[in-house]
Amino acid sequence: MKGTEITEVKIDALFEKIAGLIEESRKKVSSAINIAEVYTKYNVGRYIIEHEQEGKYKAAYGK
Image (cartoon, rainbow, N blue to C red; front, side, top):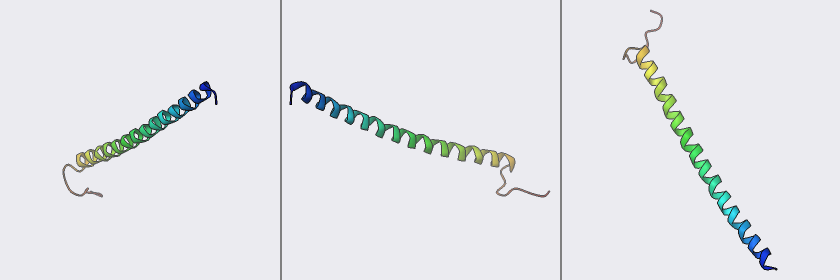
């Protein structure tokens, strides 16, 4: 192997490690965003229900 071939192999390995790290970080960020979105939408729904039911535990349907 020539010196340039060894250097290219090392650089390719470095790029693969970096790409793997970036991909792993993207997955973690995506998961965190999904969790935050679920909590936000749940609480928005809860606030709307509380407002519509005026603090009562159950809605008064059919009145």
